[in-house]
Length: 502
Ligand code: N7H
Image 1 (cartoon, rainbow, N blue to C red):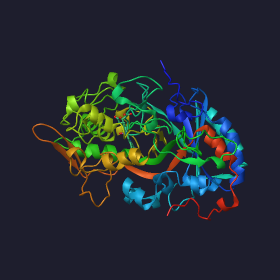
Image 2 (cartoon, rainbow, N blue to C red):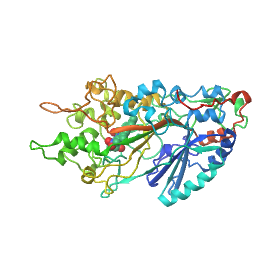
Image 3 (tube, rainbow, N blue to C red):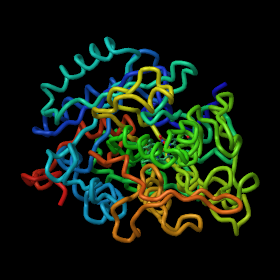
Image 4 (cartoon, rainbow, N blue to C red):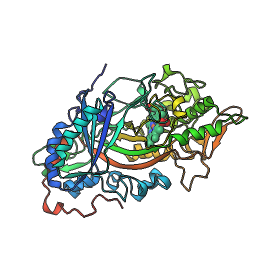
């Protein structure tokens, strides 16, 4: 049963922040560039009425919208207000500093991106549409495009489309390598299903305007009251003379991550052949599971270390500290152990303290696979042997209230850190940095074991960043406010390259 905490303003929060729309199987993301601020503002006023709020549970279609810093500039938000947004959002994903933090070099360098990079048109608005099936999505996106075609914006590149991939046998949602990828999410306190306290995180970690894991309000942007003459925004509870443009909003991180499925399984085949040089599919799946931290069904290795067990496919109530502090079941550097170390983050601290620290670095994932699956069945045996040509991967999307403390921290300090959890030259075996000068080549994955650990070296890069941007997904009132802006003449100047990152 769903229980709702009354003080979350669900009517104003955009729906995607609180639910993944699992019943809406298809989605498309439209990237827009603002050409005419005035016309775009008019369009936003009508669009605000179509936004799906967190109050409803859509079964047919859903629409959400998010903005880059460049779009706020183009819409005419004044410089004083813009300066209240956090640096990482203002700089954008491709600034020199952000590239270093994110490890975006080599194959991942923004110069090679198909959108969001320095060589591609500036991204302003992200329009996110979801529907129950393809014909419905087509009709829905046609009617929405009709609205924006006169709205002063142009579409950048192709519409990015995603369809949930389902395992034919279990019905679980899968990613392209063949693993169940819709299991572990932090539960937002006061909303949604109740779950283990260890996995329940304060709403303020994901939604601005509510207490976070420090029992504080995460910093959020504000507008001087005079700049909101119609009173569209709520008054800021503690800053007098300020209105709250951040409340009920969240920051959305979008990364288009290409997955080289063929290279992944080929590598696993090469390093697991038996003494006679024959392939050993079981050993391949076992090593892949060690890298992920879960079996293809989703069953966690800490619970079933030797073989898959689809009955545990959705199991998420576990820690590492008591069951597997040494990493003999789930390796210390496995993807899920790095991206959420749970109660094992710091063995020197008590479990409660460790969990408290861990839960300040959680993200809400809302990504979906894009491109044709290599096998319609999504069974691992078929994926391993399929023709893998083509473009496919993950539209990685996550929400957080503080990009730097949450998404960027996970990426830099856990995924790309060769010294994570006492290791010294491993990065995340699936998505870790393979090109950094700090990392001694070749890249390594270590399986802790008795009597001796096992290591595989020369890990190939199987995931490439192909695009991305940082967005702000405002509360619905704030979208109306953006539509109502009447910039003073001195606020308007928009340099010709507005939105292009340095
Ligand atoms: Fe990951 N994969 O296929 O192996 N991820 N991930 N991820 N990921 C997870 O628990 C995958 C990426 C997280 O709470 C599962 O729902 C792939 C980025 C987090 O225990 C699988 C890509 C970031 C979790 C994958 C990719 C994260 C998680 C298990 C890229 C953050 C939850 C399913 C193409 C910066 C951990 C599940 C927890 C789980 C895969 C990217 C983070 C199977 C292929 C970029 C926080």
